[in-house]
Structure formats: structure tokens, C-alpha cells
Length: 240
Image (tube, rainbow, N blue to C red; front, side, top):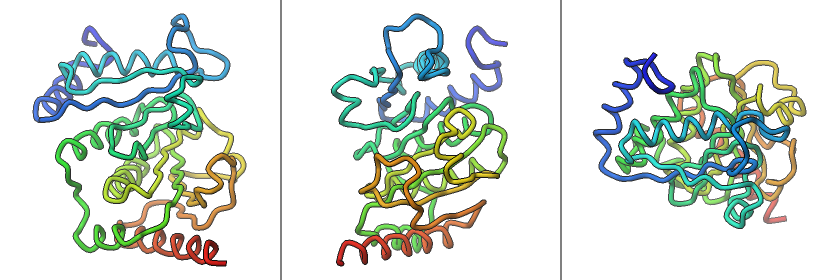
């Protein structure tokens, strides 16, 4: 092990990624209490580990990636309205892409990749997919349920993170289902990845009725058609 959280190989790979970044990014990390002692709390068992991870990534990145750590009761948190803790809210223009839980195991890769996309100001989606997702003109609340050892979850999370960068009307939440089982239980999530799309007018309702649902991995060309369908259903409801 290296001096920090990661082994030498991982640390070296991370440094290489951060060295290529041209921008300084500042994510928001919402925890139960940023001044709490170094232990988990009943409402946030992994907030301690989340803060340690943030500190380590700041160190490895040489300041290219920073974290603004705030408490759930702070005025800023009340504006951002995270639904679970810890909440990593990425440095995107709309702050519309989040990770709830501790990004470990397979989920660590897309957690890092999104910072590359933000730095590049570009994504890897096809022109046709980008065109379709840009045409979505109503907001969608997208909940991606994952677990750390799920092999297909990173592909799905990476795909939706990119879609959320293309269209800020998409609220993209990755939810670590083992840490935050509340909605996973309500929706009866039996395997992951499981993506539930709901009406953002019910953002504060845990377990809001799905408008569309995707079980497993789909190519982006098919995923955007599901999102387009969800948008049409919500738009139809708004016109009534």
C-alpha cells in the first residue's frame, strides 16, 4: 500500500489522469456534519470515509480536483437538495449529476471519468445520441441503482453521466443500493444496474412511480429512446 488509500499503481494512474486536466474542478460533498469526529453517524455511516476519499483525491490531484465539504443543514445543501448522504455533487453547470454513497469497487472508475468529461467539455457519445438527448425539453429524474461489485454498473453510470452533461435537464443520481436501500427496496430492485426514471415534480417523494425503467445495460442508442419516451409521457401529463 502507498501512504494513502490507494496502492502505487492506482495512485500513479490517478496522477496521470489529473496531470492531463486543464481545469480546476470543485465538487460539493454533502455530509451529515462536516465538523463531526472521525466516525460515522447513524444517518451517514460512510461520511467519514467519503471525507477521507475527498482529501486523498485532492492530494493526489495536486489541487486539480477539490471538494467543498458542507453539512446537510447548511443553506447551500438546502438549495442542492441531496436525497442521500454522503452526496458527491459534481462540478457541472447545473450540479445535476450526483453520486450517493461511497464510490468504491467498480463504481470508482465512472466517478473519476466524469471529471475528465467536464474538463474536456466533451463526451464520447455518438452524434446521433447527442442530437436526440439535446432535443429532450422536459426535466427527467433518473435514479441508477448500483452496487460496488456489479460489472455492468460502471458502463451504465458512465453513459448516464455523459447524457446528463449533454442535457442539464436530466437529474442523474447514482445510488449505491447497499448503503442506501430505501428506494431500492420500494422499487423491488433485485439485480443491478436498475434505472428508474421519474417525474422531477416528485423529486422529494422517495419511491415516486416510475415513468420508464431500464433493467440492465443498454447501448446508448437504445437508452436515449427510453428517455425520449419518458419525456413524452411527462410532457403529455403537463399538457392535461
